Amino acid sequence: MADAVAISTEEAEGAGLRYVTDEQPGYTPKVKGDGFEYFDPAGKPIK
Image (cartoon, rainbow, N blue to C red; front, side, top):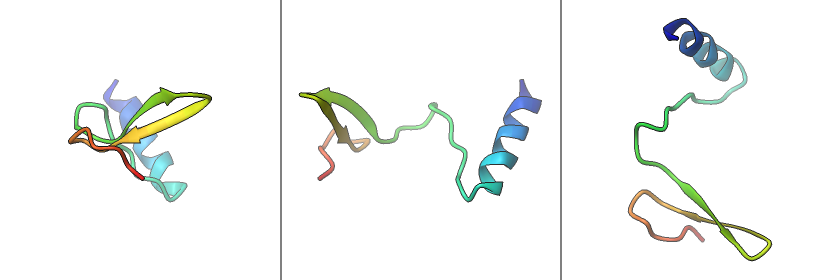
């Protein structure tokens, strides 16, 4: 599994992205109507 993470990290960096895991708090989408609403790690809506 560590090899898969290393490959994913390299691919993300090559595409100009940053690889993160879901082990740390981050932005969370929740369904709202026909779309989504996004919340920060503290649970506050992002506008």
